[in-house]
Length: 290
Image (cartoon, rainbow, N blue to C red; front, top):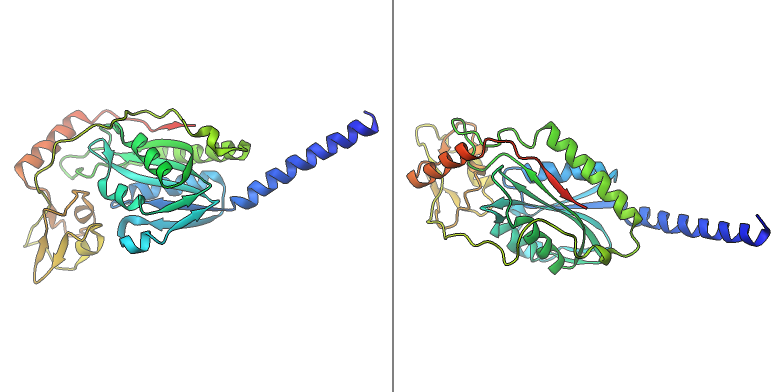
C-alpha cells in the first residue's frame, strides 16, 4: 500500500471512529417513558434498556404524572424507550393522551405495546404514529405479552407474564435495536418501518361505566387502592368510593390490594372475563420489528 492510500485509509478509519464515538457519547443515557398501571410495561421497558447496554437510565413514569408535569417533558437528541398497555386492541386512551403532551426532537425511539395474550390489533402501529407525531424518529417496535388486567385467582389470563422467556426476549430486542442504532447515519430512513396493524384503527363499542367494587368486610381502608389508581377514580371518605365514569379497568387496585378486598363483580364484565379466560389460554409470543 503506497503512502497516499495508507493516508486515505487512516483518514477513513478516524472518520468512522469519530462518528462511532460521537454516537456512543450522544446516547450515553437512555430515557424510559411509560404508562404502566400494573407494572408490566415498566418491566419490559427496563429489560429492553438492559439489552442496550446503556448504563445511565432516566425513567419517566407517566402513570401518575399530572398533565402540567408531562407538558414540561422535552427530549432532544436522546434514545428513548416508549411503552404503553393495550386495551381492547388499541393503546390505552389515557396513555395516548399523556404521550401527546410530551415533546421530542431528533431522538430515536423504541416503541413497545404490552397486551394481555388476546391480541394487540392496531395498538402498536397507533403507538408508532403517536410517537412520530410528537417528534421522535422510530428505531424499532415490539409487542409483548403481560398478565391481563382481568386476570384473577379463578380466571388466570397470561398469569405471571412477562416471564423469564419474555424478559430474555426483551433484552435481546434491546441489544439488536441498539446495534441497529449504531449503524444509522439518518434516522428518517426508518420512518416507514413495517409494523403489524391497520389504519384507520379498529373502533370499539363504547363500554358502559364499570369499575371494581370493594368487599367491605375485607377492606382495612389502608388507602393503597387510592394511591395506585392512575386516573384518581378511587377515593377514601370513611369508605372506599369508586367513580365508574372515570375508571379505566386497569386492575391496578385489585392487584395491589393485600387483603383481596377489590374485585370485578359486574355480570357483563364477569362474562367478558370468562370468554377471555376460555379463548386466551394458548400462549402468544412477543414480536418485534426492526
